[in-house]
Each structure stands twice: as C-alpha cells, then as structure tokens.
Length: 261
Image (cartoon, rainbow, N blue to C red; front, top):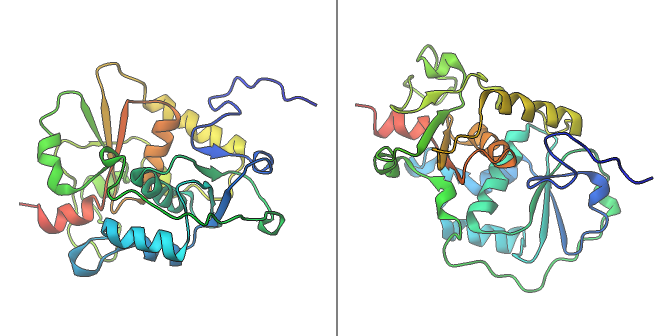
C-alpha cells in the first residue's frame, strides 16, 4: 500500500537519513559498517593532532585504496555503536565532497546486498566543501562575523569547567564566544540502532531549542574532539538551521592544549 504522506519533520525523503526499504533500488550502493577500527583510519591523536582528521592526502589514500569508496558510489553508513560515530565519518565524506551519503536508520542484513565497487576511483585534490570543517587556528577569523553562531554541544559539567569529560583532556572550560547548548550533551547518548520514530523525536527536541534565524548565516558546532558536534551538525542540516553548518575539528581538546591563555 502507498505510504500516507507524513507530516513529521523528516519526510520520506531525508537529506541525511535513509530507511532499509529505500536501499534496495539504489545503484552503485556502497554499504559500510562504521567501527572503531575504521575511525582510527580517519583520525589520530599522534603528533599533536588532538584527534583531528588525518591530513587530506592520508585520508584520500585510505578511502580510495583500503575502503575503495568512489565518488560515484551511493554511500550508506550504519553502526552498531553510537550514532555520533557514524556522523563523524559521514561528515568527513561530506567535507571531501561526496554527493550521496546517507546514514541508515533501521536494521538490515548486509549479506542481502551485492556491492558493485566502482573500477574508477578518484577523489578531488582538495576537499570540495572546505567550509564545513574548521580548525582552531581559523576561529579568530570566524569570531569577527556578526552572522555566525557558535555552539558547544558538550554537557554543562564540561562547559562550566567542572570536569573535562575525557581521560586524556587535562584542562577544563570552554572556548570564548561558544554558547552552551541546553540539550546537555544529548548527542553522545543516541545509539546507532534507533528507530525512525526515535530519530524524529530527537530532531523535534533539537528543533524546540534551536530555531531558524534569518540573521544567522553560519553555525559552528564544537565538542571535545568532534563526534558529538558532527551529529549536531547533521541534525542542524536536516532541520535547515542555517546556510552553512560547520564542525570545529578537535574542538576543546586542541583549544585546551594550544590556545588556553
């Protein structure tokens, strides 16, 4: 039977999320289960990188040669772990410039899908969406803008400086100009196996506290290293909260080590 039109926040066509029954008709499907091993291929804390993404050249090499993720692929990501983990990986692909990236909401049996990996593997020489990822050294410039909003999606205990929230982060506090997000670190709690209804509820919660503002052209999200901020950014995109949504890569970890006066 045809589906009744939904009056929910995400209609059946969602910018970032996809249901299992929508996958069967996709050509060039690349289905990828995001695990911590995969995350260690895209970000590192070695050489004072503070869990930022690896350099673009290193990432290109991994995505192309190890995972064979082609620009022509329709990429569907899922995880058995926290949703913020898959969001962090999805945001990397978005920054690079992949056109078709979706996060699966719902259960599937991966063995039902035949993957036709593209023979043509190429990626741009530079990320095609540089504006969606920022590093701490770019912040002072961003702070000059009157049309940018800065949001810290960590818990209040982290934001207020009561705790760092991480075994490896030594100093507590927050970056100037970043406002506390009243959802109190909610993005860390959302599991990868949520249902579509649960997803819609989370989006409603976010839309209740974050409304579209005509004067705001860009929103920059930050957390400890970038996982929670990536999920907040994807939700913000889903809700169309601003023209440009950006994630501060590393966030408090790098700031607290390099910029804390």
